[in-house]
Image (cartoon, rainbow, N blue to C red; front, side, top):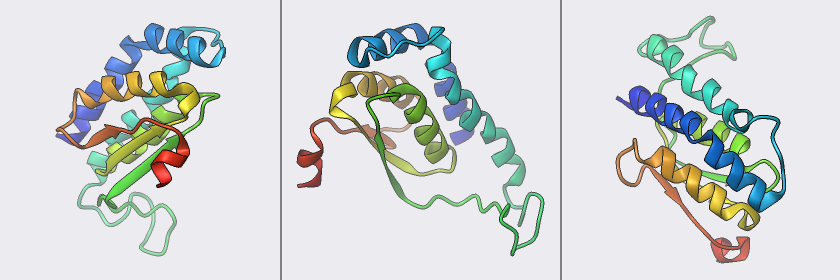
Length: 146
């Protein structure tokens, strides 16, 4: 179920590529060569759900318990994703996708310099997840620390 939700979210992120790229340019003045380039990292972590499904119940994908390629399909808990202003879509897609694919809940705090881009991306992804699995926090870093 999680894999299907993340794959559907990835498809929506790709469909929203023009809007995300425009918002990114408006907030950061960063241009992408094509709008879909800003969202291309969404493909990699979300596509890995297929590999995650194959590894469920298997001790390791390619190695042994002492190998670094050991896969334990078990969430760690809550992930705090602090994303930068200078590449808010690409970095967030990678961090959010990896955390969600592995079954974690995520608190996404984008830079206050790219807050609207972060909120737009979070909203696109969160539509496919149960309430509270992915939440967006807004404000300056000092407000979040306190």
